Image 1 (cartoon, one colour):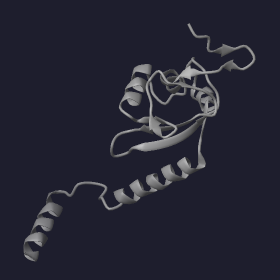
Image 2 (tube, helix red, strand yellow):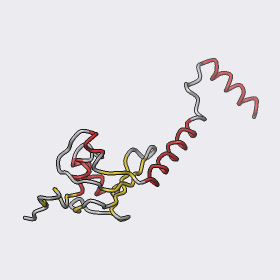
Image 3 (cartoon, rainbow, N blue to C red):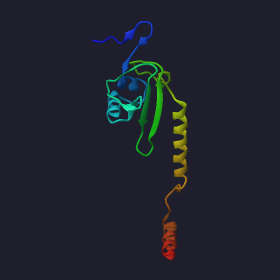
Image 4 (cartoon, rainbow, N blue to C red):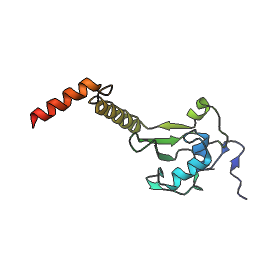
Length: 139
């Protein structure tokens, strides 16, 4: 069995699925494993296996969310741990790159702008009749 610890620095390498779970990107290791296998997690720009061992300084690209609200983060591994902690503890495990932050902010703004064209509520019966009358008069 391989020894992944060094007394002076703590963990030297850790499995990718364990780290994603510990860093709170996914709720369970099973979900982290499924994300890796489906190609939503990339290491150095390419797909990886669940058992890939990562170390401090590695860069990961992680896609989360649904197809309509997909967010992609590029993070640098800052620390390693095999234990899942609270959100504050998870924040010190990685840092998001500046390019990733600006890209996510841009796409969030675009989603907001796309939703501005939609009304806040559905038309009531009178408004539907007026809309139907207007459309029929246009033809």
